[in-house]
Length: 293
Image (cartoon, rainbow, N blue to C red; front, side, top):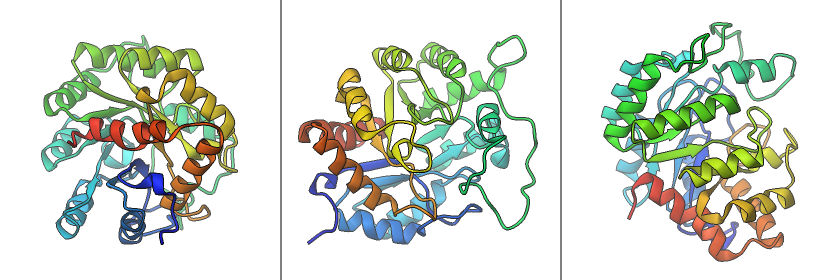
């Protein structure tokens, strides 16, 4: 009998961290996949702040062809920043997701400037520019390379994910993505304190066709930005058809990602979220984004 909630069956967590990584992680890719299989999930998306995860995902699929395990590229300083060449190469390799800057974003750097966190500790100091990345210039005009990246994402029908951008940047990016006919847009952990979005903005983005991540990490002891009860109310306000359940887990001091997803689902059900709503947010919507039939 599985340790995990039965509603995880056929689900996909689109925001999970595992190692290899320069940051402390709870599980290796293979330990994560062991749990994914035990929970009878359809798959998982591997995310790394410091490297593309496409090749790792490809090797896992070779060993586990029945699973939908995918990767992508985060546009951080580690991977070249807002590099058109890096994005192009990742997409050619089969990236399903291109994430805007996370660790390297100005929003992220400003948020953590005065905080002590266990998330990004390493055995020695990182070689990382102090200046945080933004998607626009001093006049708030989107950078030309951002337009080129959006064009590439559109051509490949990949997923644009907003990373740790500020609310104003997210709105500007959304408008530009629509101009470039990007069809798959994922608004990342909209309730998390690193880069929170107001409920009005979340509803606006959902009406414009974006999917909104509902992220368990925002409810965790690390952040406590929102309770599960408030998360459930937010899901009801947005509609399950516009939401994607993710954990953003994998930090070494937290429980493993699949266990966290099981806990998240259990708590949402206790708050009145129905089984059909869970299925929408954990299976149907991720599969639509990933192009899985």
